[in-house]
Length: 235
Image (cartoon, rainbow, N blue to C red; front, side, top):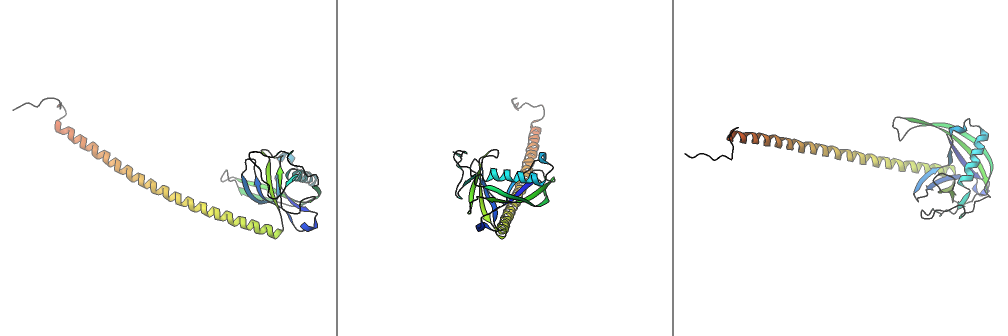
């Protein structure tokens, strides 16, 4: 169960725009590109889900993910990760309203267990907030396990988001094709090496057989009971 939040602002300058997360940085400094709405996995312990429970979950997600704000150029220093004392929590960000706008199911094959399919229950809520920056920004999440984590946020319209997702899909397709070509090349190389090894083993086996045959013939010249150390009698 995954809760997706379409976060909008009450600022008229941001009309028809919502927050899109574009990158995520972990405590060790690694950055991962993403293009998604604010989201949170829900546990089965929270079942059954209803709108009031979704509202509480949405407020919790907003408070944890965009409570500590920084400018768009901020990044974590792995040698000295920030603490809550280093950053001021932003009490001006308030959730004004929440609304469940959609739910659907998605079935995907597990990347870890081929042949096993997983059903995802996706719930989308529209969350209106006040006090958010009117320009792109970074937030720091101190509540997620293994944190802190830094998130990059951009204000985007629906057409802009679709363009981003389309570009990302094309990039992933190019990467997949590149991996596929590399795999095919490596498969051909392995096949050639196996054939080469088989030829070498065949040659080595024939040489061993010829050597064994030659040794057997040589032993027959001396005779089975003649000691090569005995002197050969004279005439």
